[in-house]
Amino acid sequence: MVLFCSGLAVLLAGAFCAFLLAGRNRAANALGPAAAAAGSALCLAAGILALTDQGWSLTLAWAMPGASLRLALDPLSGLFLLPGGILGVASALAGRAALQHHDGPLGPHWGFFNLTLAASAVVLAARDSLLFLLAWEVMSVASFFCITLNDREERVRSAGWLYFAAAHLGAAALIALFLLLGSAAGSPDFAAFTGLSLQGWLPTAVFLLALAGFGSKAGFFPMHVWLPEAHPAAPSHVSAYLSGALIKAGLYGFLRVLTFLGPPQAWWGTLCLGLGLAGALLGILLALGQRDLKRLLAYSSVENMGIMLLGVGLGLIGLAYDAPLVAGLGFAGALLHMLNHCLMKGLLFLSAGSVLHGAGTVRMTLLGGLLQRMPVTGTLFCLGALAICGLPPGNGFLSELLLYVAAAGWARDLGPAQAALLWTAVVGLALTGGLAAFAMVRAFGLTFQVSPRPASASWPRGPRPCSWPESGPPPPSWPRWAGPPWSSGRAC
Image 1 (tube, one colour):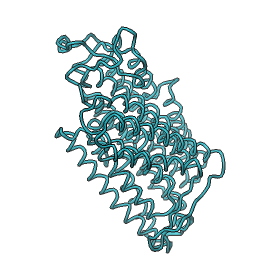
Image 2 (cartoon, one colour):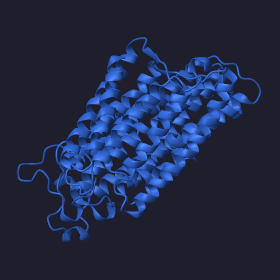
Image 3 (cartoon, one colour):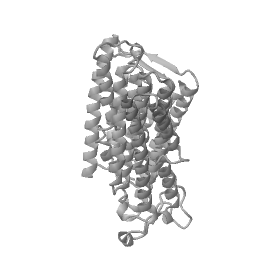
Image 4 (tube, helix red, strand yellow):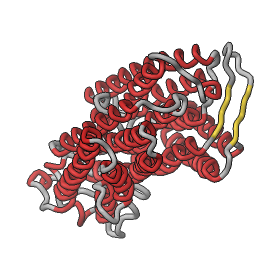
């Protein structure tokens, strides 16, 4: 409890101080990232402890009628604190290096970034629906301002407003969801929701509202429309946190609500499996057609969130048909892929930010040959690309293997219709993996391997590596920050 509350206090204090330093960029760019990294590290330690013991709870009086300020950590919350803690530290350090020559005010940006980290942590620990919704709204609004750092560009403004609209449509569904649960339980407390026996149409209504409300944040198909616009528009350290950690709050909320509903209906799992498979295939197919590296990675996030939803669908089908092994493998595959995606996508987005910082563009048709100029960035991107393809020995392979075993191993014991559904999932997952490998090989080849494009011949000094810690220390012959003149002041 002390670690988690200390982390929140550091993040909130960092946000407050960063807002006060609105006119002092150097001080804001030192204090803001330091508070974000320190607070995230404390929350990460609290999450690890929550996985190893019984967790804790804290209840305080609150002026809201019928509600209490109740926080608690259990293994599910602790597991989802890991991505936020890891990427909170990495994104803060990378953002400090990327923004040291930014020409706009940095105090508000770091204030909202720290506020986003704090609100995300409260979402995972809240055990009262009113507190949960309040933290959810703060998280959405604060991340909107993080995305729109470069709001002088029209594409950034439009992407930000699309994200804002999607977030609040999802919030409307969540308000309706908690109103239904609260009216049935007679209390807004999560403890009253656990074991609640809903009758008639209520379980289905709650399930669909949860899928729509949390799915809009997670980027589940077909509620993913904001994701490929917002991620490329945001600074790369914000994109890394959004994709690797923040959208996982949607998956957490969906799983948390499922624990309130008791035994699931079989068609719930079928719907999740179908939407997950559609999102995975659509996401990677659209990624194949992208020329912008960050946009390609954004569509890859749609693909991977689809894989996680597919795993949740398998878990629900296993529970509905009283197959605990299938349910365990499905949920385990989804949660392990969530952790893997945090590491893989965080690494890829931060590497893309290094490319943007050094070369002034992430348009792959204008790049090429960067591996010789940016060897650390190229190597890290290659490792992340291999892992996210689901190829052995990458960490993405094990999580997808669990889903293969869950679907293919159980298909033999079912009727023809159910077996056909599971084999469709197996074939679709294999096809997704193959297309992902092709997309990542294409991205790495166009950016780092092939000969430089003719346009790069006009670059005054050529691409340069980012400063530490974005891509590691540059060779001694290169200056520590040597972004080309046309990218000066532009955030990665």
